[in-house]
Amino acid sequence: MNREVVKKLPKHLREPQISTERTHLISEPVKKPRQRYVQKDGKCNVHHGNVQETYRYLSDLFTTLVDLRWRFSLLIFTLVYVVNWLFFGFLWWLIALVRGDLVHGDEEGWTPCVENLNSFVSAFLFSIETETTIGYGYRVITERCPEGIVLLLVQAILGSIVNAIMVGCMFVKISQPKNRAETLMFSTNAVISVRDNKMCLMFRVGDLRNSHIVEASIRAKLIRSQQTKEGEFIPLNQTDINIGFDTGDDRLFLVSPLIISHEINEKSPFWEMSMAQMEKEEFEIVVILEGMVEATGMTCQARSSYLDTEVLWGYRFTPVLSLEKGFYEVDYNNFHEVYETNTPVCSAKEQATKLRDEPLLPQLPLLSPEPKTQTFDPLDCLSELNPLSQDEKMEERDSSDRGENNGLAAALEEPPIAD
Image 1: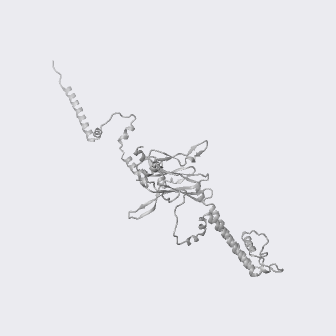
Image 2: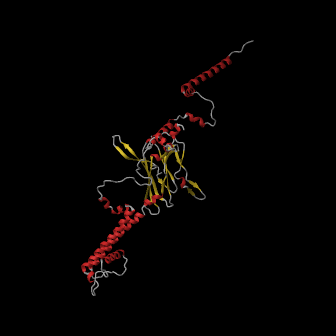
Image 3: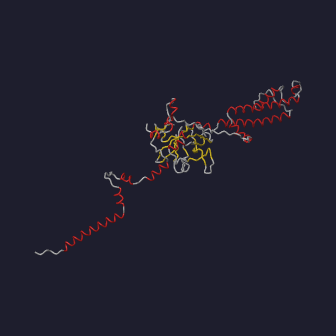
């Protein structure tokens, strides 16, 4: 295979396919996989360490409980209720112990604080019945126990608060909009090709559900290391990638899969980046899709990312939409499929310079209905376009015409020859 053809191929096609010992000895070292800033499933690969002010998590206890993993949430949910029942069960047992109900409860004429409460187990069961309002009817509080009435009010109020917090946390955790993001799809690769005579970076998004995302909007960030002019090194610098913010194309009607396009112009971070230079760069493109869930009205956000090795130069996405009888059908088997297309390997800046400096004269013969087969010398074309040479030719033509007219007049004025 020719070297020039090999250079034009993407990186994943130029890697050696045969894995023998000799091939490993002569092949180039393979790049180590880089850490992602955002995973393909949208999870941010950032861990917060050495946090000294941990009390800030307790100031927003509800959000802290919602953000916990399911196993910790279920453990805390169970512990809160059990500890609450045990605590108030201990208080009911303590009241019965102080009043002497545990000793004189079976005597005639003795009015206990809680009837049929004769041990800690029975006090624990009475605490559960009081807080959950089960009301079996076997154990009941009497009117001659003011301390028991006060404890009953306190347990009823605190029990309602505990129910509101824990049930609310579980409800929010179950209905979290991040679960809705599981049905939002991003293409595996991003592509760079020419669209409407402009170099564009494109990727595809889609929604698997029939309930659509309302007010969907999309934005993108370029993550790469940067060193400032003062020498400061920024390891994860974020740069905006315009995907239609000024034109409104970032507002999506996500009914069928859409191809999101970023025009590589003077304001684009890829303006001076060619195919060969992109192979040497290390960057990551983070894509963020936001909108409201139509069924619940909650805000949903889906994220994905593309490394430099996942950006294919000179490819386009395979169409997935087809017209059937009375409806449009989306074939998600081709959602991630791409095909190769003719694309310049130079940067968008070099391509724009070539188009701007391209002469107009070679395009003029295409405007004529019949192509001209006669060739012209460039020097002759320049001499014809020179205004001085045109004036000289006009003067020569006028002088020749004047000379012919004078000769004709002189011939007419000559006298006739006598015989």
